[in-house]
Amino acid sequence: MGERIIVAGASLGGLRAAEQLRSAGWDGEITVVGEEAHPPYNRPPLSKEVLAAPGTPEEALASLTFRPKRNATGIQWRLGTRITGSNLAAGTLTLEDGEELGFNGLVVATGLRPRRVQAPGPLAGRFILRTLDDALALHAALVPGARVSVIGSGFIGCETAATAASLGCEVTLVEGRTGPMERPLGSALSRGVRALLTGRGIDCRRGVSVIRYRGTESCTGLELSDGTLLHADVVVEAVGSMANTEWLEGNDLDLGDGVECDRHLRVLTAAGQPVPGVVAVGDIARYPDVRNALPARRVEHWATPSDTAKIAAPALVAAINGLPPAEAAAPLPTFWTDIFGTRINGIGSPAHARETRVLEGNPAHPQAGVAMGYYRDNTLIGVVNAGLPASRNLHYRQLVLDAGVLVTT
Ligand SMILES: Cc1cc2nc3c(=O)[nH]c(=O)nc-3n(C[C@H](O)[C@H](O)[C@H](O)COP(=O)(O)OP(=O)(O)OC[C@H]3O[C@@H](n4cnc5c(N)ncnc54)[C@H](O)[C@@H]3O)c2cc1C
Image 1 (cartoon, rainbow, N blue to C red):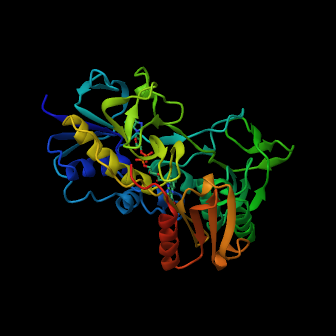
Image 2: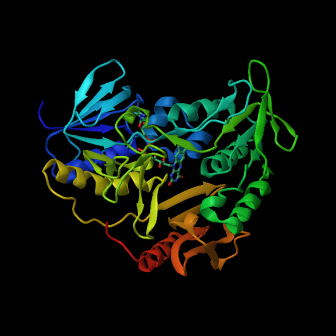
Image 3: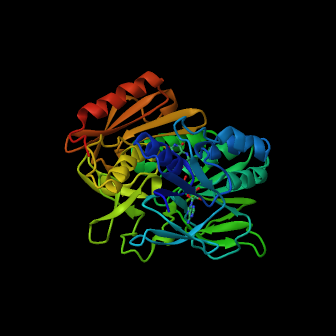
């Protein structure tokens, strides 16, 4: 075998890793192995534009497919191929048909899959949303007048509820323990988002969970923890995600929540030592928040695969060449979401704040323009702004960057 790096997972993280490996000077083989049959495509529109109006499957895929950067040449794509096991010490992966692939370096980029609601009842009629195929199947069910229950009020639950309502569905949002997007936004702005949702006819149910699904062959409704029965033609489960780590079992890693990494995105053993020649990128990577001196966590946002690939790829090439990783700027997390045309932008780590202050506007009316500051020990660690022009978003980004204390990995 010549020199080969395998990228496991062919979505945004896998693509960005392959591109960054070339940028870091790797001219050996790069093989990207991905379970989905499609080339890497963009997921955010799956709960927004594509869920609303996908066109044909071919049109939807064409509108979503990423165009690789020009330097990403000579990459071998093995799509529709699941990795079932690995032996990191021996430098081998096992594919579902039993084939073994050897590597000198490995990028772990197998991302997440939706968690399911643990309640008894039929599975048919219950949808999830992670892939293009999920979005196409859900779109077909979102016919005007359909009674739709969305379980979970995080980003995907809120966006799906808003899109379903805009398609003329009768939507109930079962919020769960916290209000709409409350973890990243805080309670004041979350209440404003709830007002946005209810103002467009969505029935938001607070502090309840599903205890049972009704129906024999297919789901016809749900029983909630407060005793209410909701009739539903369509149920969407948006209750969070779990990491695709099963293929890494047996390698003495900490797989408790994604893959534990150091600040260079090098995968660590359970004892905290870097595994030679193995890095992780994207949603699956759990890495320390160097800016805020906070413990390692996963960051499930679109910018994360690109940000982490920029650190992980050079660290991997250095390791293969027997060199230590170079210093790199620590990622500044960012996210966005769209609810009925109101763009909400997040910068930094708002979910880890101890105090929230209004910087401008009124959180009760996010569509009219608002910015909230999130503080820890009096240091600004994040800003969320909604309904403001892009120039204000840039301003707040700079504010968070300027407030940051530690900025290199
Ligand atoms: C519906 C939706 C809407 C979103 N909207 C936003 C948004 O508005 N703003 C925002 O900031 N972020 C958003 N995100 C998040 C963003 O899309 C993710 O952070 C990003 O896709 C993560 O990329 P990734 O490559 O790390 O993981 P993934 O995209 O999960 O890719 C992992 C890939 O690995 C493959 N894989 C898994 N296991 C194996 C295996 N054993 N063998 C081979 N391949 C495997 C999977 O099939 C998948 O293709 C959204 C996500 C979703 C699902």
